[in-house]
Amino acid sequence: MNIHEYQGKDILRKFGVSVPKGIVAFSPEEAKQAAIQLFEEQSSPVVVVKAQIHAGGRGKAGGVKLARTPDEAFEIASQMIGTTLVTHQTGPEGKEVRRLLVEEGMNIDREFYVGITLDRSTSQNVLMISTEGGMEIEKVAEETPEKLLKLQVDPLFGLQGFQAREAAFFLGLEGEQFRNAVSFVTALYNAYMAIDASLAEINPLVVTKEGRVLALDAKINFDDNALFRHKEFLELRDISEEDPFEVEASKSNLNYVRLDGNVGCMVNGAGLAMGTMDMIQLAGGRPANFLDVGGGASPQTVEEGFKIILSDKNVRAILVNIFGGIVRCDRVAGGIIEAAKKIDLSLPVIVRLEGTNAEIAQKMLDESGLNLIAATGLHDAAAKVNQALAS
Image 1 (tube, rainbow, N blue to C red):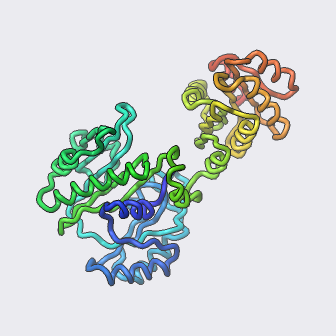
Image 2: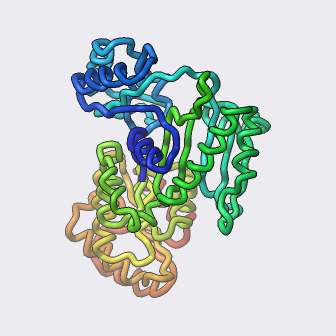
Image 3: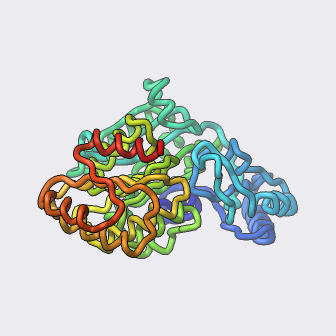
């Protein structure tokens, strides 16, 4: 689950992570009042007005601006709120700005990058440090890997003091800046572990001319599988920032990600779903979604899956690809038949069922009287999808 920058900073602040003073605003008037308060509390000649959306690259898209007076903050907020911000992460459709963060200005000396996430190749958390703050870390890793330090953290011992010091040394810090950076990295790791985050990314991490080390930006993602331990974080979810199809799918415990293709996919198992999308692409089609109905697919989940797929107007054909391991194929076939009777399936539906009770399932589909196209094997299924699209 993703949250906004200001929400992430509120959480980090509770764990002793240094962040600038900031106030969230939902209207131009609230932005003006926030600016008045911040100007009274700080010596900086500016405040920063930042659009709050679930995407990076806001600054380059005009979503981060400086205000030198409360009235200027009001004008900036008036221009931002209600507009659609398009960045390299939002896609061409962009995201509507509904709230702002008004933050104290910083006397920035240098900008760095700090991130923590799980390295699945080693089953350990990895602390990433880079001297290239404000840039995409993927680009840094690819083009200038010598500017990126990765420190593996043993889950039995946690982040050690020498690792925090190594990170500060890598950034070339000394004196008070060095001590503050060590404290910052340690507090950030403690926060990451305590809240069961899947990502804690500070980009940029800034060092001020006064020696302060602060998170100028903060991206916090939670591990959805651990949210049952942190029910207080559920209220931070902003569904207006999420794809409405994905929100609807989550209500039925379906794993759905919308894509820009024309072939709807319904599959059980993430690996098989990825393979199915690859096969569709190779056959000349384009997958419209990733949809994993899970190992225990029921008639209800199958029906909900069809509804969500059909809600996408770009879909011109549907491929159902089920391997009967945990779930029996006849159970899935029953769900398909039941759903087809309730929903107007005017689009071509190609069904490939393999595994437990596959023959029984195929017989059920053949005798259903429904317009379903049977397929044997992935190549055959993909070819029939392509034929359906061409017809």
